[in-house]
Image (cartoon, rainbow, N blue to C red; front, side, top):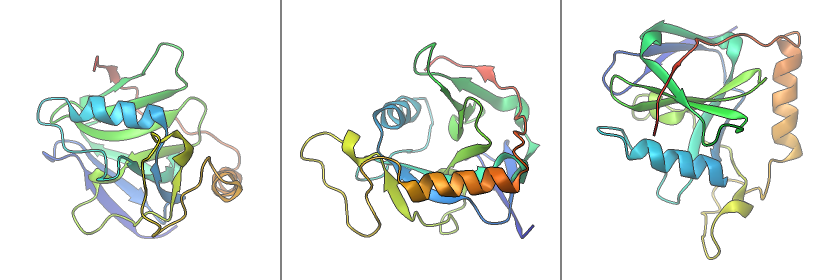
Length: 178
């Protein structure tokens, strides 16, 4: 499978292990990711989540390659609205964003702030650039896709095939109002 890497929240009370290479490392520009990141950054003691150009960086891993070593009881999630298809989960010990989970998804979008400085996988693309406010500019260092690209979906589908079309369960987080 590959090398295991330990990552965790800012205070060290919530630790995870990811195994092997990620599905992708991306920066999301969608309205909901930017709104949620702004709310999470506003929590007391929370680390910065948005990049300098207003994107939300994620490292996407198959669920079967993510293990919670300690601190799963610290996890609490929220949705931007009751009908939202995604849950954002933070470590309540220090309000560090941990992951974004799509309902029915076979992967977790782990917030890149979990990696120690200088060790996170570099992003290879930005998605949903069409959601940025008019006049916003992005650097041209990586592709800036207006939506999710075919290659993006192909990587997700390939990971699901490799998992035998299974969808692993994640810890059941508590709830938090942000």
